Image (tube, rainbow, N blue to C red):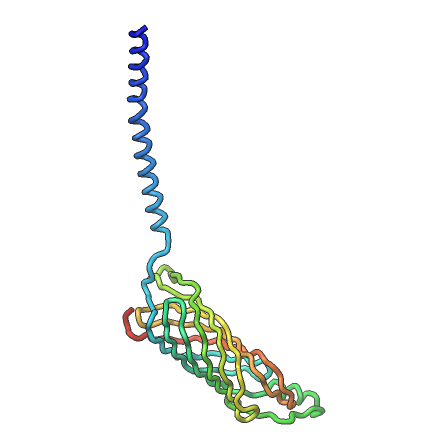
Length: 229
């Protein structure tokens, strides 16, 4: 009985010795595979920004087209200053200037053989004094035609200010919002594209005041100070 019992114990010991290395080897393989997967996941994850704008000053010169709701469309130009107090948020102050005229309405009235006349038909300069909160909601990179890789921001703007139409309505409140893109060409230089909607009270040529939505589409260049991030 005793020899048979010792034989069973020896067989179990051999079986345990045979299985233990395979489990250890399997565990090593699992650990190596885990490290490899984690490494690949870290490689594909979020990478640090190469262009940093936090606590930097941005000066922009811009120009484009101002599509008025009632008046004729006209060129618009101006500039903006933005202080970026983080990578995501900034405060922008801007000034833009355009021209307001009513050539299209006048041509329609001329076709009516003078049955309707303007109570006033001012052609005047329009000045916009605006402030916006800028939220950079996404950051990415793009390659144009196989060239070097450039970084860009997509951002939203929300704010308001005042519009000066001294010849017809004086100084009035304006709400403004929109979106834009900034392509970073160097550590201190960027190309920006902006679309803004300006909501304001407008005195129409027939003497009626109306809330209008004027849209501006502009492009320009931005210089960042200090020159390096």
